[in-house]
Each structure stands twice: as C-alpha cells, then as structure tokens.
Length: 340
Image (cartoon, rainbow, N blue to C red; front, side, top):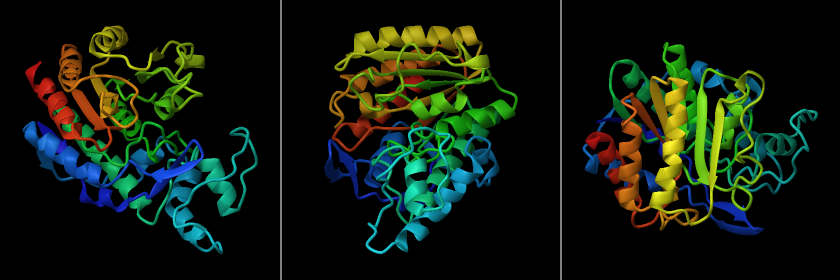
C-alpha cells in the first residue's frame, strides 16, 4: 500500500492544553509520528515523497483571512510583553459575524475555538505539510491506486474554514476530498474518530457535492459538545448530505460495527466513487480520551467493512494518542484494508 508523510510535520510541538480549567501536557505530540510511521510500515506501507501543491487547494476551503492569521500570528503574538510561548486564546466572539479585531489577542479568539490548538513557531509549517501529505495521497488515488494512507499530523477534522480547534488547523480530509472532487470524482468523507468531525461538517454543511458522515461519541457530554448531534443534517442544498451517528460512551465493537453499517448504507446511496476515511484511532479502548471501547481487531473489521464498498479509499490520519496499542491499531486497520 502506498503511504505519504513529510518530515516537516514534526515542527509543531505543542506543550500544553487546558481541560476543565487545568493546564495539561498536550497529547498531540510529534512522538505520535514515530509510532504511526512504524505501524504503517508493519502493515507493508511504502512511503512516497510528498509534493508541494501550493496554497491553492488549501485556500479552496480555508479563507485568506484565516491563512494569513496562521502564517503570521505567532510572530505578532511574540511581540506582546509577557505573552506565553504559544498562542492560546482567552476571549471569543459570540458569533462568526462579529467585528474582526486588529489585535493579535482578538484575532486569536476569533480564529481559535478552544485552548487545545496552541500555535507555536512551527505550527504553520507542520500544518501546511500535513495538508500537502493528504493532497499527495489524493493524487495517488486519482492516478489509480485503490487504497492510500496519509500520515497527516497535526490532524484536521476539527478545523473549519476559518477556525482552528481540537489540535487541528487545516482540514486535511476536507482538502483531500475537495481535490478529488475537482479531479472529477464523487467523494464521501467517513469520519471514524471518537470525536465528531465538526470542522468537516461545517465546511460542507451547505453543499451537496461531498457527503459527510461521522460516527462518534455523543457530544451531549463529550467534545466538541456543540456539534455532532443527530438532527444536524445539512442546510440549504446540503440538507440530507450530512449524517451524524452519535453513540454512547463505552460503545464496543459490535455496536460500533452496527452503526458503521448504517453509515456505509448512506455512502452507497450517495453513489460515491471514492471514500475519504478520517481515521481516528482514539476510538480504541485504551486511548487516553476513553470514549469508546473499540479493540485492536475491531479496527481491522472497520476497514474490511469500508473496503466492501469496492471503491478507492483514501485514509487520512486524524486522532489517536500515545498509548501502548497505538501503532498496533494502525497496523490492524491498514491490514484490514488489504484483506478486504
């Protein structure tokens, strides 16, 4: 199986995030790369060179205002007397139509949804090459590969068109899907991360040319809280083109696979000819977020079910954090892709 990764993704090295008002070590660490890379190699992946597609495919989904912010905010923030090493917001507008401030502090609040997406000196470089990794994997699909893995880090599915959040800055899965669409394909995004892909939903919510489906822990008591509920079905032309399947905390393999059957039924009904899997390995029973109880073998069964669609599959890495089974979970999923 072909895979893609660029070493410049290591530059983003967040030190902390806040949860329940407490400063904690940030779990989205560069060390994830070593584990995931080894896990992919154990499944027989051969890593290719990532190509630079420029800003165009990124700007197709992310606003110029937001991209300027990501590229410049750390330098501007560093000029503030007494500022922290990382850009972390402390004030937010009450809606997306509020006035746009000139202040670095105000813009951080406008463009960062929460305190789990700190921006450091290396964040833009890593996010840029994470997106380029997904785009290179999309190129391989267009060229005729059936299953391709993009080791994209930092992840992307919580990033809206102009808003970072949940460790995410650029929405790699959405950017790849848009590239596939522009290449003449009909993509569906299937998000299997334990957290709802709220940024992906937001980007395509008013559109009917990309189907978005997310299976995740019920947000009524789980991040991202405000998005991911079953009644969110899309708006305008997008009505009926977004499917959320929230499941109870502690969902295990059989219940998860039942929900996956429903999700795949919608992908079939949409007539997708390519599936972008936003792969969150944080659904595992030992992941630090403890949302679901999917087993290592369960990831292989998820992959096998997706491959039964008999469509090309682009796997884009999302969550999944440092714990003893992380690499084995990826190996299991990618092996499942090759057995189906």
